[in-house]
Image (cartoon, rainbow, N blue to C red):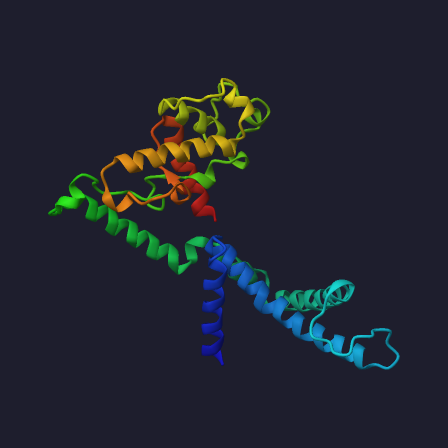
Length: 263
């Protein structure tokens, strides 16, 4: 039974990973689904079947196959009341120290096996880059790509309003001195790349998403021109990150690593 549970947990974690969330959040969602949602669905359906079978009930359904609407809300609240009481009892039984240690272990990314594997892969990659090796002719023009995971590129998903300072949200045209402001980094990157903008008031009138698309298109041009035949078929939607050229965009690499460590 334990082996089956472990196998199921691995499959569930793999499924949740497809939503592109960090490993800590994957763990939390897997725990919620396993300990709350699945148990609730089973108990709620059994209760629904009892209500349908009751001759005094007003429910006209012949068969109960799923719980929806007001019934689901009502039963979920009742289930969570009982579940919360069980959680409090378990916490008292464990004690504050043991509970704190378990919580820290589950919620800390550094305790995950993937974090250790990631560090080992980075060390091997860095070591391999410095080693001398024979390059085949197809590799000589393109060289070695340092991916976003390795800290060589900034993911475009980082360049959004969420990571923009409050002042730039109000006035995008200002000279920003904030250390890790996505809006300021995008503006400086566009200037550094000498991208010609048709709209003279592009800083104020274009959304950060539109500005991000400008960088995406420019990055596609660079990729197409670097001589790597393996990248010649790449499309605009395939550009998920950019190689930073300006100082402010390079500073976003540090912010990216910090967010990755906290996720």
